[in-house]
Image (cartoon, rainbow, N blue to C red; front, top):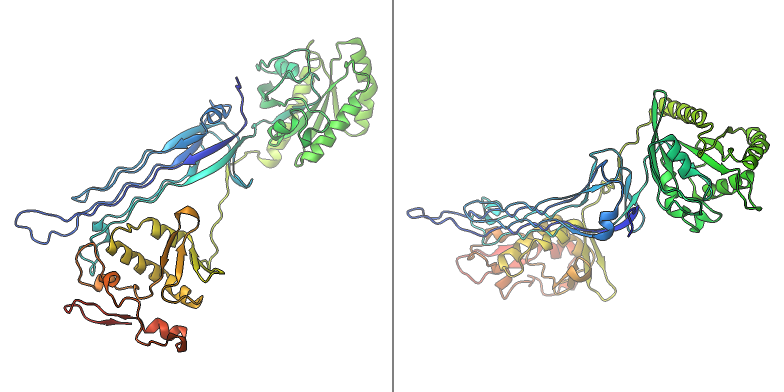
Length: 488
């Protein structure tokens, strides 16, 4: 069974908000008590938080579907519904959050760093919250919004100062075990190391972390071997240490050739070319290894690299190597004041964004998309005529009516708000514009929707009217004689 997972797909579903309540206060000797329906509670968020005690994404590998709690509906007597519980999940330090298109949403570094992976839906307003000076007793409430559902990619990039890189069986695991308290699995066959190992090294007053990355082979940057899966773990390293096997028994390999191949793979991966390099010629405890190290050391020094002859098995030359790594780390910290901070990507809307977009389709219908109109639709109880009239008022106030006219919409034109299965399709009636609060109709009804004259114009020949004239000549004819005739 896997014990280390550094890349998972998370299906996060936040909680939905509770519905608002429709209630009228009733008490003996208190006439016209007024609306007292409470608001629904908000849905719970799904939150990722960095925990130093977590080192793998294994929990998400076994349970990729996570859902937060839903908000409770509102109650009468101004009682608001309870909020849904947030779902807080611990992730390792260095977790990168991406969407399915590969865009980075957050780079979580530092214990306690939080990121809202999916936001809970807002609770719907009760009829007490919808009451106004003109709409004194609303017979409807708003529905709670659905929680956000997102598919996210979580990738772990180890937070280490030094990265040990090299061919399989070059001695990286033995080296990290010799210079730190880490105890990785060590064996005499290739690809013994299947997961990155982290160790803490103390050199004088400097303490730093070292990451042992699973062995690289030619073509690793294109997916061969294990390299591509774990190269991301050296992206945060301040310096790289090439661990070169000077005692290999393979006739087609030598330290210089191994170094050139690994450098080629790093250049293909990208982002690592500017990192300082140190070369550790390993296995000098072997007779052939010492001779090989003496032969290739001048070649690397001629290229401008620091070279150290070491033996992880015999603990030779490790002190000098540790202090060389510490020196690079000290310089890096002084120059850059090295402190990797959390990066959360925000993509604000354009300044001139009106919140919606109207598109005329080839079949003559119209599609309205945008956060606000789609949210208005989600909050509407279509079984309540007064709520539908209120929706028409909100869309008109937003400017959807005028934009539909500009695009050429006419009465009975098919209008779709939203996309996909959750879209709402209706025949557009421009007569149901603002004015619901002015109509004296029973609670839960809207006379504009019931009138047989709804949608008719004063002028019969609308083709001869301009768009502005049409917009100004809507007429509401209410069958109830107690209601005034309203003309706009």
